Length: 249
Length: 230
Ligand SMILES: Nc1ncnc2c1ncn2[C@@H]1O[C@H](COP(=O)(O)OP(=O)(O)OP(=O)(O)O)[C@@H](O)[C@H]1O
Ligand SMILES: [Mg+2]
Image: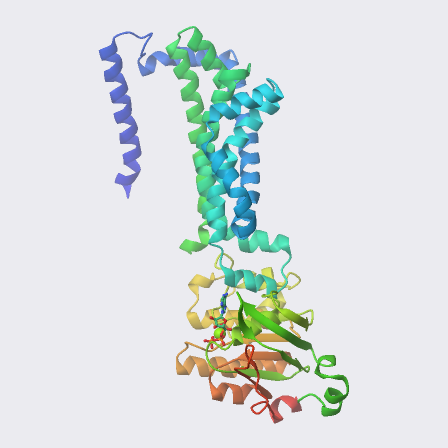
């Protein structure tokens, strides 16, 4: 359906239209610059190496926090979904962590561990683990007991069972958690950088916030959004299609 | 053939056979489902388990298979077991061939293809279970059961909810496979004709004072020419 492919392009164009109109009405490029006003600054930041350096620093933090949060959340969610006893013990913790503001965890991590990389990544991870756990726990509760019995009768090893029986059933939940995970994690990473790091997109935004430089704030923000969109198209969506292949066969 | 009477009498039924079942009791939240139930199955024997609905036949099978471990008693079971469930319980995300080879890790492609050929599934190796008909999925479940050369085969109403014709085909197929591979077999059925055709012995669960027990009057031994001769 060609019209369907067109819709995202049209909607982005519409958004640009709104931006341009707003910029015209504002009439002050220091408060809201035109989209094309950002291009020279963007080129300058790239050629000086500043933008790639900070982008890289943020990406590394996002990746670490993502892998850690997904791994811990998967293990915890699976354990809690399968063991009602463990769930009764850990559920109150989960509720507390789910409702702890991100800022509180970040500040406490910096205060207790220090203004370093470990504290930054730990703060982001701790923010995301409860959400992943909750989603995966739902999936673990919906696991097919008949397949479980089958795996037991045929004495499948725990690894084979996890890889071929459990994870395929959890796939939709893992994808949902990964989706919302990436989106939330990079926003928290920016806050963490804003508050206590000397590199990364969040640090640069902090810097240009103090200089009241709206165009530079926008350049850094948009660069990172673009990278995250690219990750979605290049990694997440193809992975999702691959995992769901059998459904459409 | 049944257990030799002298052996059974001298050493107790638990000392012989591929599997020795000695359940003292099984309860679900204070509800006694199974009372003392003990029996053993000799190599090559096919035992039908019958009884009224809700008496605990599936529960007994799950205990024997090792799926349910919450009971009092002991079970001695062999290394290679297979179970055919009421539903095919295949992995929908793996091809037919991979369904066999994921469950039986050592199985070569040739051996898996042979197991599929035995159940009339040649040419369906690369299809996903969702692309097979209901009857073909059941055949695949049978192929999976026999591909591991089980010493003990357990089946819980394998032909239920099939139309008469398909049930007959599956019954004949199962009969052949059992004759060929000769595992010890324990299966639950509601149909008298299934029990008579497949089984060398029939066990009946009857209500007892503390959960179901084996009914002695209905426990009978038969000699089947076809299986015992092969
Ligand atoms: N997970 C469970 N929790 C509580 N009670 C159960 C559970 N599974 C089975 N029961 C009870 O145990 C009894 C025996 O159930 P089971 O499924 O073994 O019967 P069955 O002989 O296989 O019946 P059918 O011929 O209808 O399949 C039933 O009364 C059932 O309600
Ligand atoms: Mg049953």
